[in-house]
Length: 460
Image (cartoon, rainbow, N blue to C red; front, side, top):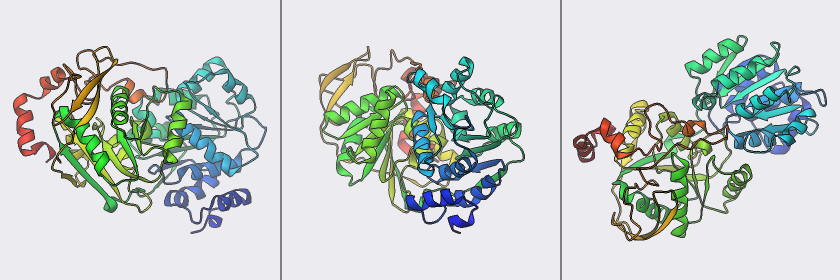
């Protein structure tokens, strides 16, 4: 099928041709005809499958310039909001698109909303504008929830419901999500009118994705990561951590060992985060260390390796992380670096996705690395060299290899509205997903840890 068979306007077809798109992706082919007819659509599609063009086509075709705010796209993160704005701008020159998210001054957004035709917003900041009466929703005729499952996972479901209630009843509503969970379908039943459900196959080619894991004691995690990064022939690399603190710890140590790396998490300013993604996409740095804020939604190409320095608590987040590689027919590798604190989370991944083939790897000979430790007060403490789990003068007295001490970890809540999944850990989780020995040992005896390490029974 060609784009000219999908019912698109001449303006859209011209823009698509200029962008160099030849044929529609599966989600575009399945969703665009219903979208162009004005029907409500619920789409299941992975990151990178082209859904922005799908719902963007409906927006550009129906929104009229200078007639007030007529389309609202809700998305979980600032980066994704900026990405969607830039994509829609490529489809039209006549419509004014603005982004609305937290972490930046609100006054410029108030001014921009006066003349906006389309708004791309995170839920928290959009609610701020509604409470301040600085946004007029009376002319909204298209509402899109992008990465809907992620918004629900991050605790935005109540915010999203309140925002939807401010929209006119007569509108077109579209939900796009990597997975159409029961909660999303329930939300759709409340706010959508007989939605057309479309699905697309995963954009990642499992046959080209190699997954492996290393089982290593916590004191040698960082050494293994450095050695793998230095020895593996790779393109762009993403290293995933569960918390800001671990991300900062890893990035400092990689730089100390002369590995060109940058980091991104919700604690950075928006300008810093945008610049970091741009530098990584342009291959100015080969390694991006990040939290799950970069696992989904963002457009990052040519990632050859994904390293999980920590395993996420939710198996779905693992899938979204590994989906960053083996895309568009290219090969990719996923390397999981496990210690005993990752066994529970990794076991959940194995149980949820039994079709995954994740090979156990032998630990290579680890060369000496430099180490920058974190002291108990959160400050950096420069240590000595580190080999085979033996620490120098800067050793961790009560710490772990994934960053910081166990004794005084706290959960720091940010004013950001796009990183709630790790700001507010799920019930039963510790402040750091690496876990503290005390809380972890209360649920797993040392005897069981030893048996798991001996026979790998936890992966079965």
